[in-house]
Image (cartoon, rainbow, N blue to C red; front, side, top):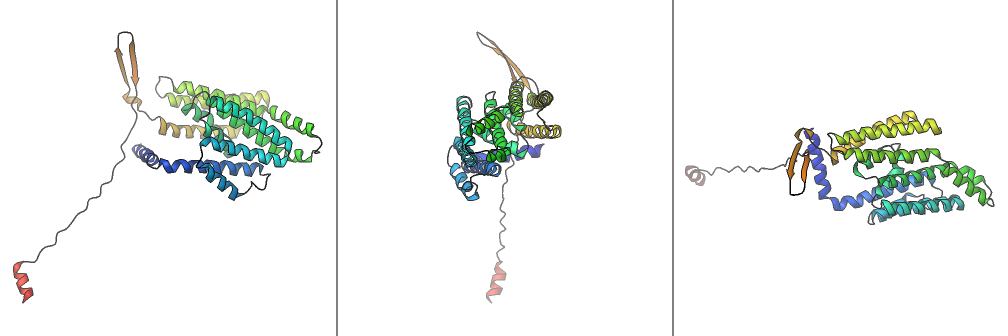
Length: 322
């Protein structure tokens, strides 16, 4: 345990020391991964489906605010949809405009959440998002996660229906609009996922704020079970074809990641909990103080040892001179 605490301190020291360089690098990596996944999923416009273009745009994003990555990602998606069909681009643009209004109204600082939610779906670990945002976010984070879920399902639906859309006649615009909108809105799996993640975020948030020992651990386990039960019950009721094995494995992996997050954000020693009571003229105060577990990183000191040379004696010098 001490080794892990020392490693944690080294990581925090490294981040604080090189923060000015790590922030642009983080933005570059997030933008590059996001745009690469978009091109890999719906790379219909050849001019954008290029590693050189992605690198240049990601480099530009590294010097811009985080919200700029959201706009660039949305622009990539809309342009790829336009290359597929005008109707897909129009529907996607309208959806993005509605999501932007919700996002900037309720959770404008959750840029990474909006971007990382589709990324976690692509990596097969989406269940980590409600646990993580319940621990370090607030109930409004459900809006950001929900926006990410909607974008993910919209992209997946159009990508799966690309062949059907391409086969429709160009003059039958109304049929294309109806096909896209009906298929997207009737996606019960998307609605179930939004509801499950939102409820899980709220449960984790309020449980981890309780004044009980091991509140964060209880919140992680309770949130994981809540998400698991909602998705399983929803699958039975709405027949959403949820992969039971993938759901269980993904939930276990999400719990492990949440515990790592807890270690770096909220690592306390409940064995040394203190309860303090005091008063003033108007109130009595009951305070519960739980100390953090901190270990100072060992500092290395280099000692230089100098050896003095022995000077030759007077007799030896006289003999040498002779």
